[in-house]
Structure formats: C-alpha cells, structure tokens
Image (tube, rainbow, N blue to C red; front, side):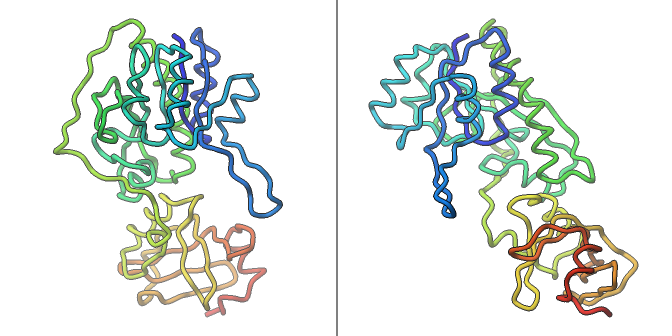
Length: 303
C-alpha cells in the first residue's frame, strides 16, 4: 500500500517506524508548520518531520488544509490510503482523496472520550481500562465507523506519560493490522453508538488548578492524568507549584487546604482524606522528589 501519513507528536513515532519497516511505502508525511522557540529563536520541527527527514521522506506543511495547491500536491501522490494520528481535523476534500479513504487512530475505546485529550480524561475520571480505536474518517470528529479496537488496563501507578507511551506502542501494531485489513478487504466496519459517547476536551490551564475541597482520590486522578505535562498545580505564598506524583493519606487529619510538613513529608488536607506530595516543582526550578525539595527549600515551614 502507498500511504501518506498525517501527524505531529512523539506518539506517532513508533507507528511511523512500524509502517516504514513493513512492506508498505510512506510516500509523504503531512505535519504542522515549524515553530520558533522564543528563547534563542531556534526553529523547532515536529517529531514527525524529524522522522521523515531522517528517512528522506517528503514533508508537506500546509498553512491551511483547504489550500488548493496543497490538495493538488496530495493528489499527485495517488496514494492508496491516508493514515492519520494525532492531527488536525481534515476536510472532506482531503480525507476522501485516496483509493481506500483515510483512517484515524484514536486514543480511547470509542465512542467514549471523543476529543483532543482522551488519554488524559480516562485517567482523570478514574477509569480502570482504556484502549485504542481505528476508524474511517467522517465529517463529524471521532464519529466514523470503526475498523478495530484494542483494550488496555490502566494500572494504579499509570500517569499520562506512562499510559501515552504504552498506547503508542500498541497503536503501532494496530495501525499496521488496520492497513493489512483494508488492503485485503477483510474487514467489517462497526457503527459507533452515539448514545454512549463522552467528551475529552482539550486541557486548559484552569483545569489544572488543584481544588483542595475535592476528595483526595479525585485530586490524585487529576494529577496522574496531567503528569508530566501540562501538570496540575497549586499556589502557596504566591508561588506556583506543579505536582506530578502523590499518595493518598487516610491517617492524618487535616482541614481542607491545611498543610503539614516535616523534613521528609508534605501533606495537604482535602475534602476527604489528604494527599502526600511525592514529586513537585517550584515554578522556574527543577522537578524534585519531596525529600530533596524540603531539604533545599524553606517555602513550607515545619509543623
């Protein structure tokens, strides 16, 4: 199969490697335009562009996906299939170009968690299981008929970073299997049940602020779902502190928002139970385990 790949982040790289090392051919990749880092004015490529350049694969970076010259360039490849992973919403005039259409790999068991942040929201909502779905692109986002799904347990110590990496590896196998199914014509598309749909909206900074009135278990899930990026945070003495890892403490009795600290422990009272902070980062400083942080910082007075 002759394939054009559309994607951007690190999540795509195991998938690209799997396709590249198969008998199928990647004709080109489509990825967002380069960014310029404010400090030093360094030009930043997407991980997908870096991969493509390392393999001498043509790279397309349109400002607009509806640009006529971009669409004509895509047509010239005469691709059998477009594979889409963690990319922008494609207009119909793009996703309908290939002989076998276009399919997307989505980071949830659709129709659950339609939207931009499915991995994060599965953890935030305390799910015990998630997975991946490959589906044919349709006009409405994340609603197309499904080729296949694979489930994956969410372990108690998983955070966004660890689950992201595991799903990326699973996704590489799934994408290749889906390509093979489409090539062989040996698939039966399954409709999504819209009545079971749930949203996974983009994570905003406001969502990352910890509200100590909420139960410790709810806050722990939020912290896991946002770790390592963008990271949950709170303010103490007008300083922003990011939180990456916590443990629920049911023994200590603290009022909501009350802080207990010692040479090796930092605990904050929640709406129910409390949280031991295990890994945090003061704004502008390095991420540290709690013992190292308390040794080197007097922000929290000892109780």
